[in-house]
Length: 474
Image 1 (cartoon, rainbow, N blue to C red):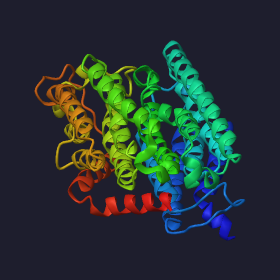
Image 2: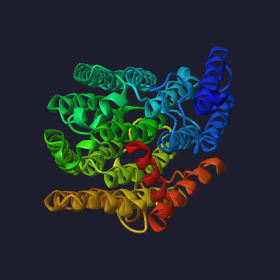
Image 3: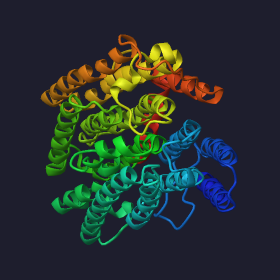
């Protein structure tokens, strides 16, 4: 019974996934299916909060850990799933025959992500990673325009499979070095000093770099962001980023005993951070498609996260976990608005939000808060989150690296301000008003509150992230 309680979020996720499967098979209405998915999200959040303070191993020792870190990330994943389902009120960019499958694939992908952050054994981690990936590969292809959806899904799937294969190759190095697939064996201090460990670790990170949109596995991001159905890319841009940062923290904590003497692994991550920040921001300057611009923005923000992770320090892990939750809120605010204004449009350009403050004042304000966060302006979490990320590098004496990050943040200010200019200083190209439903409005307000609360009162959120980081290191 105790083991079942530890596994409660995943059990609820699995059971409700089966219910959604039968709902799709029996051809229930989308309204009913979406209602079930919303109820599933609420139940998952309740289960995660119930198990937040529990610790243990529900299965064989060493393969699956339940601790504060895993349950905190699972709570964020459950909230993300709920918010995305709510945002998918009328997924008109999804093929009408695939509407019922969208919540089904979302919940099974969420299940895989939950299992990823608790996995403490390489094969368990790999299986969970694939479970999280394949439902998303499928749902990206459910665009109402088969030509657009097919191209987007093919690029996303092929690049994802390449990254997955590289990860598996890296895992084989780790197994060959330590003679075990258990994280407990891999994290032995004297063994972690072997150079091949860092090669295996870097290769293993490939699959999670892909999910994060980090260099050099970022090529899918702008194309998939631009062409995927709006609710689908909302899920990819928000929920999957939480899981990616979480599992990167768990994997990099294996090298923590090596501390600053992480050598080539630390250098590789540092350059990946610099290139991701620079490439993402410079490429975003030339974009006219709003989702494509946010795709390159994701690459840049992945670089900011790597800035903290490459320190191989507890402060860096804490800053990354804090930023994961903050980035989810900032990004979701933007994509919620895209889902609302782009229900009948396959592609959303920057011009599509022209004069939005007249057509949908509240949605315009929601997008404004999300953009302020991504820019890094106070009092949003973007400002505090970047401060923590930069501080992690400064504590290691990496002043010039932080200077590069600060210059990149200044560059990003330009293209975000272009969007804000279209929102409030350009006349609308259409007089069609957009009125969100009460549930959408409540979700948008909750997102705004989270963005501002984490920026003005970061203490409680930082404390939770710090506790999760300590659970990882211990």
